[in-house]
Image (cartoon, rainbow, N blue to C red; front, side, top):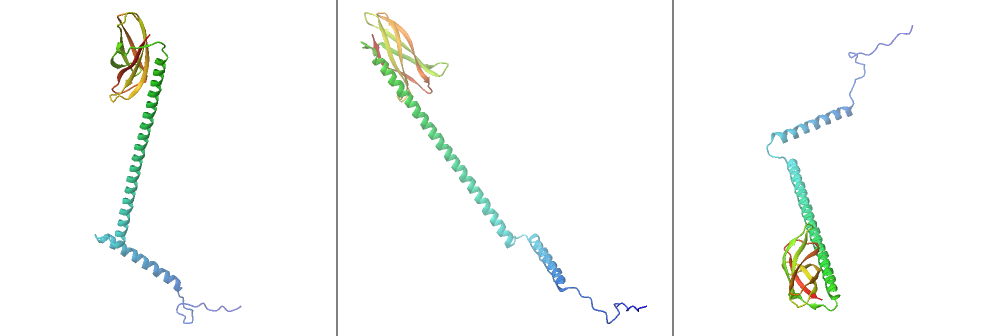
Length: 210
């Protein structure tokens, strides 16, 4: 039989020396160093009541970010308020323009109606207007008193303008009064064509008898 060679032992001076790779030792040392540095940094931050340079920089950056956010929010709110005011002003202007157009159209129609009365005589002094009230639909209304001081009967057509306290015309209408006997008085009611608000006055602009 073939004789087996003896296996080297730790006591055998001829046995090869077992060594750890240098790379593994270097990695372990680096890991230990990183852990030591991390521990020192944490200890420095937690044990010292004065913020470190890095912590101070972070705090400063956070404060700057919060200031920027607050400034942006304030700017957005101001911009939104300005846009809302512009929209309200635009809507109010458009509404006023439409109301003025409607009033002008009503005046033109009333003047045309009176101009169509043939042989009419001016009789504005025969008509007086009472106080303006409001009907169930929000329209302005006023009672007219027509006094015929002539020696014969007449029919009347009366133009009434509804105005605000500054005299601006809000609406206009024409009221036809049936025949009023000589030396007699009749009542009639003038009603605006649309809803009117505010302190409204009624003005008898023109009246004709025929």
